[in-house]
Image 1 (cartoon, rainbow, N blue to C red):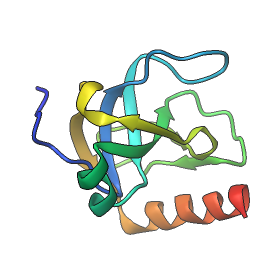
Image 2 (image 1 turned 60 degrees about the horizontal axis):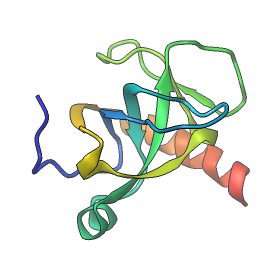
Image 3 (image 1 turned 90 degrees about the vertical axis):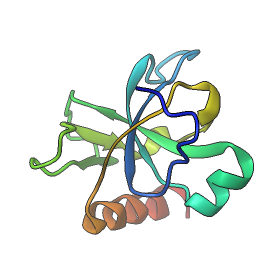
Image 4 (image 1 turned 180 degrees about the vertical axis):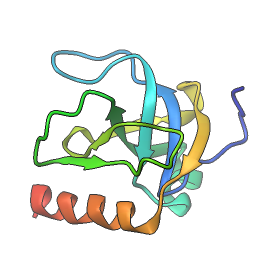
Length: 113
């Protein structure tokens, strides 16, 4: 069920619609990892998302999700995208452990800095 009052926070896994997309971008209604903090998200109605895929390929910018979560697969850190979550049919799924957040942040640093 879509909750219009839900505001995503860093470390949440959500389901949302990535369409429209182009080229090699992940598309469709899919799970995603939220990297931006609540304070940013609540002020802007935007958040930074990283799609999650079940097709594990062993790329250096994949972060594996723990097996005890509802969501299976890897976070695609290099596919980060700013989206308006209020129009993307966002649904909260679960929260990842702190070590997953730290691994994602470490890969972002390598990618950007």
